[in-house]
Image (cartoon, rainbow, N blue to C red; front, top):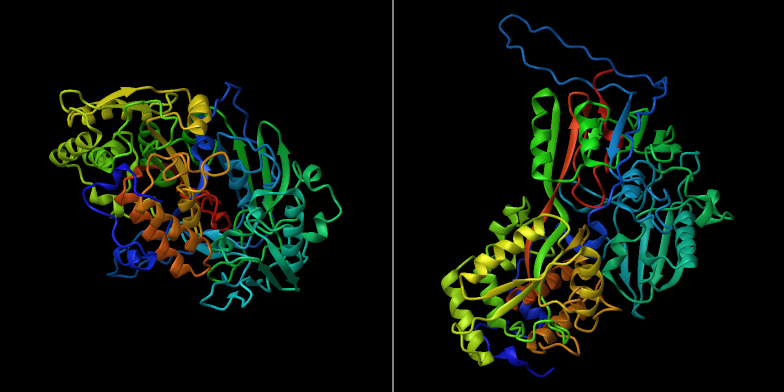
Length: 612
């Protein structure tokens, strides 16, 4: 593409080759990256006031033999220390949540609701899970995750890619049937018949199933194979049934630590111990420890928090409002534990480069203007203003020195860059200051608060900000779809696994504007005001990243692509929303907050009562 108006800019993007450009970026392994899910799905949920349901009565514990706790008396001269209680088997836990699932089947419409995942972690299983500490993919039903390095992935001479799974020998369904390669094969067949999204990008050339093996060949190499099979479906139980109709209120045999028991609509879902659960504790003991788990639905936030304060529920993951976190932390002296972490939703300021920009005098096409905005604001200040974790990377929000860290707040530099942009645009600034039209959602408190702050900080460098906040339905509908904003603000959702970096890059694909693609910014698209060398470089990196199954190469390409986006200030990442989990730790051990889509129930098989 021919250079556009902002090719006359201070600085540059560097060498045009992806290989050479990659030399400028960080080689650390990716820990977290984003997928193409618009943050509207995480918008405020309108919850009607309803009577608070009573906690369901739990059943009697099973007869599983439990270890006993014996504390030795200190001998003379020894200092007595507080002993850690030895957890016993048995007991139950009640988890409170402000949502109720539409279906327990993760593959039907409505099954992608987060509460379905939260419950699903207790009874479903797939090829992989996500570790709460490292945020890396870890094997679940497989002995190891396949890769080119370990021989599990092969790029064939004809350009196809073969992936091989070795299923754990001990992995069985709750009815005692082995989990086999035929179950993986059936899952693909069932999903293909229903045209589910997660199989849509994959062109299966061949599949070969065995008792504990599964091999499949895809027409083209792709890193997206990593996150295939989040859930596996049992052929012996589901084949011949109506998959869409028969598995919503009831569930197939479990592969997870618990088995579905009952669903009282509007109140709770109850699960009981899977007597045939195949996973073992570190000491070789049987899992899970608990007899029963009840998910209780309390749609009103105040009622949810109140139920926790009254010990009617043992665990909650409430909205991360600062006042709620403070209230829960006030219970820590009484035995509660509150875990607050940077979550998977990252917020960002962004620019519209398409022809429908509502601001006829927008300077977005000029790199110097976008750089001026980046130096004028403080991402740390804006994020902390509303209780978010500041970020400087979009493919790894957890790191503190990503490529956007180069834009530390510098008002003098911002003014100089704004003067360059005004000169390039032929404007008389500061006599006639440029006007930025800023749009975001008006429904919640955080974004309007940030919008008000932007008026002050950008005004200090000579940019007049006109706020045009909109209802979320309008903003996430007509405004984003048609590209009618000038400078905007919303969020994307993060996911684990190196392959997610490919999805992050796709958000900015110059060849994929809406409705077929996710490049709502219209950066580098056919009708964009920006068509320069950076666009070409990014497109080249993206093309190579899409066609590689080599994790190390993909990570290098991802960082190279992110560096291009940062150097050209296509967007400005600001902060990751926090997530909070609260547990009565004087009653329950093993709870570990997972900030990814794996949810806070990711390791529920290790939860243990210590008050029996």
